[in-house]
Image (cartoon, rainbow, N blue to C red):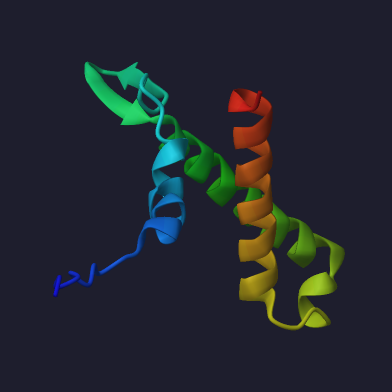
Length: 94
């Protein structure tokens, strides 16, 4: 009687396990040299998103919306995140 080995993951599930690895590029992540050091591009997009969020907060205060807008931290964070992702998409999108 043959003893069948019970694998941790059966064969039909291997593509699902390995699918996240298909997004890895051979060329690496986009990066820029700043003062002799390499910085990933997502850092620049994050900084731009932070400035967009600060600008949104300043606009809300100057327009008087800060008094009536609930959850201002979450709204400004969402605006900054959306801005950072749009910058990434326009700058590095294909």
